Length: 511
Image (cartoon, rainbow, N blue to C red; front, side, top):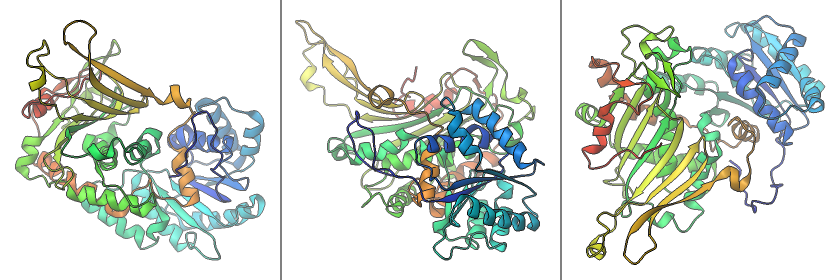
């Protein structure tokens, strides 16, 4: 994560291209590559952040020649690029695309890959630096890394670096995450492992740290003395989008809470690191996750809510119930919505509740962190027409309308004392301009320069699973009979509202 400062009207020039390298993408024929990785790499080339000496090597099951692969990616970039494609730049880019068909579990594939990388290093000047991206189903992770190790492809010598990016899901539960960490650490050093969470590639997620620790106004009040509670919301309007098989074995907690929401929680609540060094930041994230009060089975029943959407209306169009989606069981008990209340047992946050919620088929796509400050004493206003003081809210909007909103009270003009709520709004696009992005550019660049700040460390992953394991265990032991329990197009089950009502609070309106 590169930190630099410049007035918004200036172009940042302090960031330099990454070092020469070859990027090997396992699963290069899949959706992730064409929709996100390829456009992200093109954007890096367009911004002069890719080195001149680079190459992309695709590895996949699909039988395809190198020319066929280049033609496919040429069609893909014109369909999925976030900017108009510059034909001259793409022609240069295309000449550095290579392809190897093969099975991920076949040792011969890796021998061929080794030979191809030697050729690529010679033809493209990539200097023996190799980045391996595992854009595959999670059941292939161990096989690929084991084979890379056996073929000597991840051995670092003579000044060459070798790094591996692993997509989520990283494990299915705590035991599987520990097993996966153990298996890959027998082949790779932790410094070579980059567990990716694309949410951390979003500028506004990274800005949480800069906002908190770079402004003397906020950090002194970022604690239990001044903050009443925090709400973190990740809402989606889409359903499972044809991924019924995947989602049936996953659900909202595994898909969103354990990774995305916990990353937002950690960055919002962690203590200031001593520097932006990767391990300094990740040390503080680990401390925060360790400080989350463990949930007993009774806590799970009282402080968590699960939901599954029924049929309803999204954007004035009827949509089916989850159980009617393709490749979903007609009696499925998989949750598409989850809400939970967590408390953090440390000096900064004791007695401050953190409410997290995520769901599919909600009325609006939004990701935000909302911080409600404590109400001020109302004695001063007893002899006025002000009957209730509205609490101050600070909202960090992650997507889609990236920005920061601060809500405060002000006097309404007139001879009597009346108070109105005022919104001070900052929009990234209006102030800094919009930058075409997939969210992967920063993460790919950081991996190429060896900066792991925005990637999860082994202990971060396992601590996240430790928090949600009691929830998964109780929900598995006590299947719900209430599904579906919220209509598509609503904000989730009624129990989620009651989760806050019991504490005298309510979800912030995102309408």
